[in-house]
Image (cartoon, rainbow over all chains, first blue to last red; front, side, top):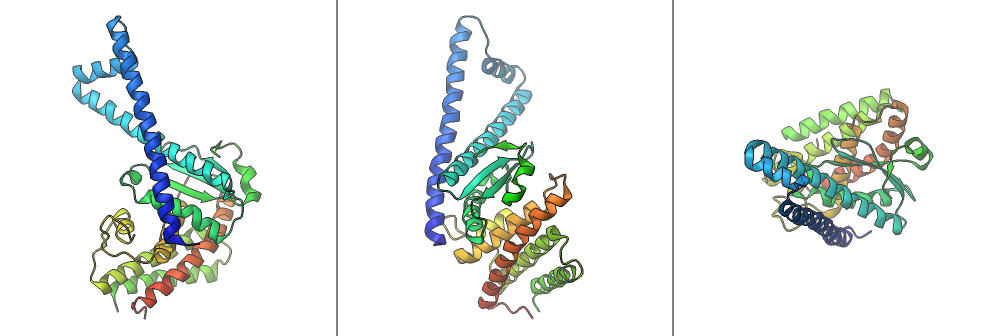
Length: 162
Length: 134
């Protein structure tokens, strides 16, 4: 495996995927605000408008709420990025299955490789290395745990992501 | 002897002792040891080269990766991958979300095999970079 070329390809592709995911989130938020604006004109307050109202009437509480929502959206965006990566890795037969462990503080993924050898593990870690260079990787810790195929049935209750 | 090499050797001795005493147990601690030997090797290399790679893992990881964010001590891609694999393995070795200790041990045993390979290669890189480990 040619590490430098491989890593560069992952960096560019995954950055593109993440931007796509984040753009999707922002577009959804914009739609929520537009709907709220329309509903407000007819006398109703949607959840987004109620949040704006809180921000204006109690700025500190409002800012904390916005901060929590930003953290939550970042968490979801990172999970989206990881899910996309695992789907692609499955398409190219690098992985067999990936599960997300139920953990509210971090993102832990359990990965069953198609061929559990050093090269396959290195290739999956290349992506986690890329993630580790992003500014928000400290804020949203991501862990990869490889799982031998004979143990995969022990994790069948976890959420399947690919 | 460089203080970082001294610390690395101390950790290495601990690793070797638990391997001798418990050949098929405590893989999580063996992995953790390997990483904490490697990070001291890395600090010894930085000291050898007169570079500041930072204190926190996030700083260190960025400062050794060649790329466009002005790393203070970029190392080869292979050495970087080996070091980062040890970093990732040490994180999952310290993850406390697994309730079944037998399954956890089995996972760690598999991880240790790759971690040891990464460690051996990383150690060779350190020695070939001019750091004396004696």
